[in-house]
Image (cartoon, rainbow, N blue to C red; front, side, top):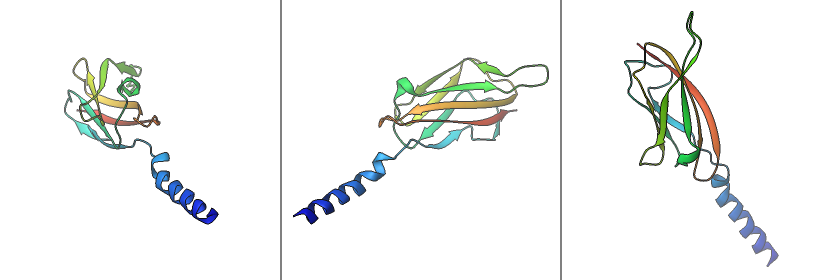
Length: 122
């Protein structure tokens, strides 16, 4: 009887191990990391898990240039209807230059993950 309980507990631990350590991962981004693109009207960050909209955001930052400091760009961030895509919409057209996207998301299983990447506008 005790052996069956130990085997059942071990099987349950293995079954839940995958979900216990899952974290949302950035699957793709548009514009992609290190890409040079025409003026995008929005950015799309797709994740491996559904996101909690209230805790999932991104900042769009224009990198410093000679004679100009780094500058945060006014934008909005919202989770799309699929629940896995974070849409970042600049409030004005992006000027040529290098941009950094600093994002932080919380998945529906409450795991928080953050990251960043850069792209350029021609």
